[in-house]
Image (tube, rainbow, N blue to C red; front, side, top):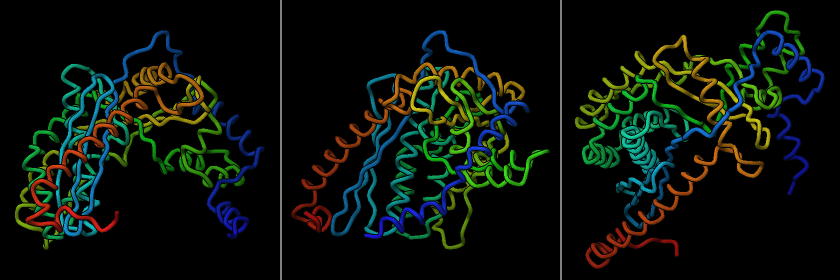
Length: 353
């Protein structure tokens, strides 16, 4: 195995490790107010996290899907299921079913809690539904339309958008390749060519993880990328799918036009020294910095030590969702076996043992 060659290949995709540029960047950003200190938490505020999980079982003819979503505030979960013929479209349906359960759980939790925090980006569930709806495969489209009808997706998504407009929706994305901060800093006045290249050689998260001291955060920026979601119509789509697109695009339009979404990176005072990305919605964009200070302090109060890299409620709800979906897929496949094992064995039997 050419391990040395592979490691050298990896260096092509990683940022410069020049310590002089890192020191200069930190000094420059501190001097220009681009690295801010947020208030130290005086108590542990409630953090209500939402997370989902999805599992599937592929038989000779069908893919059976189970999804679950949970909240860190209560020991309960919401589950849903779907089925589609074997094929590449199954992955899109998986994403849409999980997205609907997550949004439904967020709406349910908001009835007893002022703010809810999504595990992942604010707009990710909406993108998952939009992606599945643009699939022109007839069987996959039929499966999705039935799922949307059964789950009352119109009301789920309308209420999810309402939460964001009301400034009650926040998120903690784990996966992140954004480069908006580094691109802005690279083009700031008095940035040397060497520092310009150093900024652009890495992503936002990897850059701020090097530059932020514990207890610091970046300024907020408008989450432009979270406000572009739209469901595109294609001529090959089924009539029921097009009807759903017409309905849901009304809510997606409200999301683009009425939601005020903002982003910052936070370096908790505890933990392993990895920056945490916060996305939040607010009713008044002029209050975004104050709202981010409050959010950063809440997150800081839930970082319990060096071994868990995320806030404890976010970690625990992930385990709850995975446990719930494990039970859900077992229950689903037990019902499938009872129903189809003799009449349609291709719906219950799988190739792999």
